[in-house]
Image: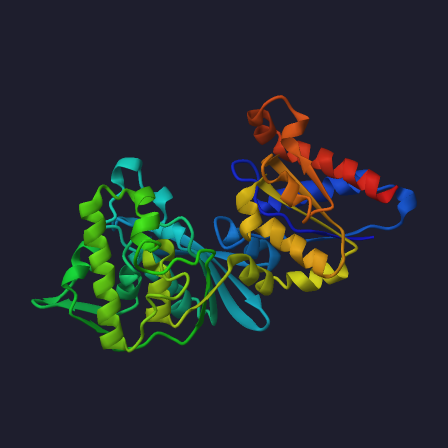
Length: 381
């Protein structure tokens, strides 16, 4: 019996790696000896959001690299990303939130007029120059920024001008004055930039970066929203004239406060759904083909899970190759339960094992082993 274990993180309790280990331990404990030999392959996964770099580090045997960078408000930090070898190429895997994430700021520090992706550019520059990465995968969830990627571009050597000269540190509140963009005098090494992006928002308008994501980043009022929208519109216009590209209406351009637009414009990046990109890198489909049964899961299986999250993506590959797929979750949304039954052969819920949600989080590894053990006993009988 060949078992593929490919869970996402159980947020607040277990990383994807820890969840995979707990499932593996439980399955081994419960597998009946009479059912024959057991082979387990573990591929902890992610969907491009938090935990993506860690999942890659484990799956590809990579290592963590640390570099100097700046947080969204320009304060010095140490940031890290994963460096690994895949298909004969050096690959860097990073999360924009490591330098530009909302978690870097206290609630009263959120300031979309000044928050910058400069630190994300520093990470990318380090990966391309210092680590000689030939491919870079960037997850762009959890941002604190709304700068259209100009901070990132500035760190990469692009220069932004207004009528009175160079903008030394371009931030969103300055963008309405933008008149010209100049590319770096010395281009960076040509690396393939792949962006894990699970939203389809354009840069501007009612579904754009400012309108949809600004409020969670500290957007204060309609006046500030108008300022930011005008700045991003000006950026798109000037980029079209100065660089000959116009990505403002591309699906995903509005992701991470317009960082999707910035990566398309300044890095010739390719945007892909997060799970699809991760699955491609980790050769997940080939692992599904090798398996007789697939185990997956995450902390919460709910309505959002049905919109492209990792466990449902795994289930889709399993269904494609007619492999049974079992899901494990900390909790299952009652509203999503009927739809989840179409994706998984069974769903085990840790919350159903204990009296409180707090207990299920605190005992997640133990409960996951317990559920996996029972599932193995049933499956192998």
